[in-house]
Image (cartoon, rainbow, N blue to C red):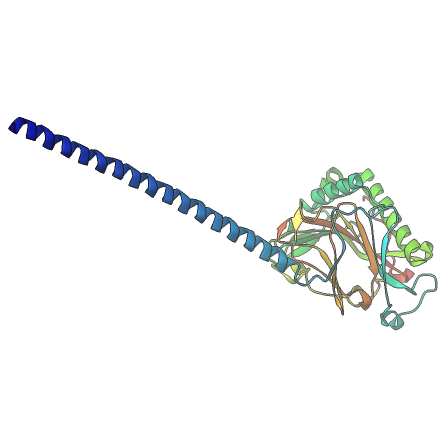
Length: 317
């Protein structure tokens, strides 16, 4: 009888232990599930925070842009996209040249003057030339006309003895011929758009390649982002053009060209082979955004109506 009671007691204890074990397993499983659910929730919160932060960042980049005149993904062809603006009085302070001095002013964009393949060739030309030196800051220039090349905090002449025979290894006659052909096509589309006689337009200085990245400025030459008026900065300018050699969004971010109008800012997004051009007076106050990532390549090609300020196409020495 005592043995039977002992067995019953052991059976009762065993059942209790089994219930406790099952309960413990259930609690552990519940705790594990709650931990997993908490982790998923935390990840979702982190993802949402990243999305919001990215949206706020992109929004901040566009905060001063009233209108995008031309996006990078658009193809402006065959005719230029033209935006007319009233001419400023800047040109009254200079001698007027009939058939050239701006009578109608504006800004225009075209993707039908230079091919993307030609832009790639010109970009490689710029990369080879700028590899000879380069600025310590974020902006470097190469001027094939004067020979000016950024080096550290100053400029050197690529055609000087300093570089010796390196120039013939860096540039070819074909490079310079393409450069001249592209310059001629840009001159022609500006003349056609603004109703000018191209024979009365003259290439003027500075006309140069630029390479811009996000490196901090070291000298005032690196501070390319300040608003300015070309006719005020360079009195000889009457028409300004830019040929872009890289793509906004994939080769670099930031670096868009911004026209600063009284009723808002309007931007052109660079695209390799795209030509943007405009009359150079204060009707086209502008700036370039700071490049935040990558490298932006372009050529500034400038024209004057004053033959005294004209320059020749570059040629290898």
